[in-house]
Image (cartoon, rainbow, N blue to C red; front, side, top):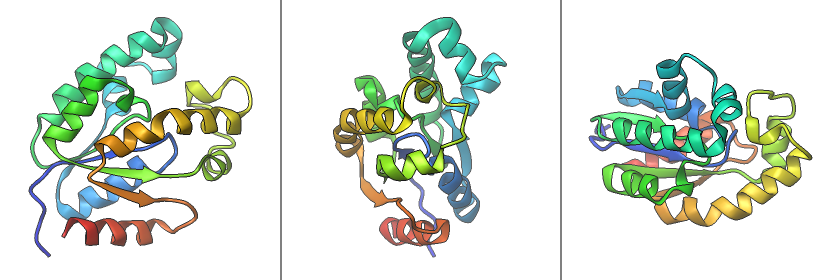
Length: 171
């Protein structure tokens, strides 16, 4: 199998599988894997939830754009972006211009089940999780589509099924 030279960037709602799938593909394609949120945490030494608490979403989004700019300029990488990274037009341009973008499209109902006990996602800590995810999906779905080179559904499929689907799209 030919190794893809392009960078591959994953977008999608939180919990869609961007990090899990990204790590597995990076290993398979011998690419370096990055996760925007993890890189921000590493750089600042605190969790994303703490950044949200101290600086608000606006402060976090500024840091996210700086990190996305830095990471998308690297070569031969796979990157999992934060779910809200596509809200910023500059971020969307970085993604579209610097690699192939795979949108992992997961429905809010599936995500709510998957993340029922997840306490590390600041945007899900207030109110009804399904309502929040549904609202985020309505707002972000068109933006994910606008940057996507490929859309891969990630409902109840096994991880390996999703990996095979992505491999066939990238060939």
